Image (cartoon, rainbow, N blue to C red; front, side, top):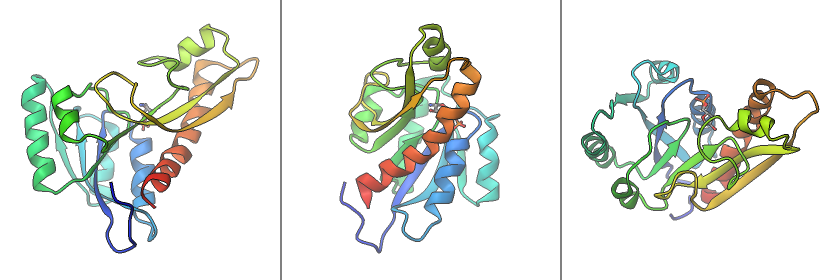
Amino acid sequence: MAKLNGSKKIKTAVFISGRGSNLINLIKFSLKKNSPIRIELIISDNSKAKGLIYSKRYNIKKKIYLFKKRNIAENKILDKLRNKKIKLICLAGFMKILSKNFIKKFRGKILNIHPSLLPKYKGLNTHERVIKNNEKFSGCTVHFVNSKLDSGKIILQKKIKINKNETANTLAKKVLRQEHILYLKALKKLYC
Ligand code: GRF
């Protein structure tokens, strides 16, 4: 995707399923003058996602698609994205796996944040598994999304030291703080 020339921000949709701490972080960033993105749409597969409150607070349109049938939900989403001329998708705690067909339509334009040092610890419950395996380091990764889970090209990673008495909970908090920094860095690296 072309880098930003200063006049036009990239129309972006953020996909969430839950709390939305990455979403609010992205929203605040997008409102800055020198941010390369403008968030035009929040999409969720979960009508109870806490992060949906930011839609009203920041006056950003939201849409919920329940994914009972993935292909139907995805086709509706694709229509919506086309309709709103969305050029970039940021996954932020989105818990559904997107199909190959969907990803093909937005190749190289879907980013995700994952709370581990990929390719280690793909999938769920990363912090629990990291602690259980007595790892010395963990971290987070921003990557492009391809058709395999948490396997697309890595854009940036941040490594974090694990303390002796670290728990999955304390680690999750530490990593999340770094996620918020890393996602913005990745966007600047790609588009500024
Ligand atoms: C984050 O840890 C993110 O890396 C993972 O899901 C979590 C979402 O948190 N994919 P939030 O909803 O952004 O607060």
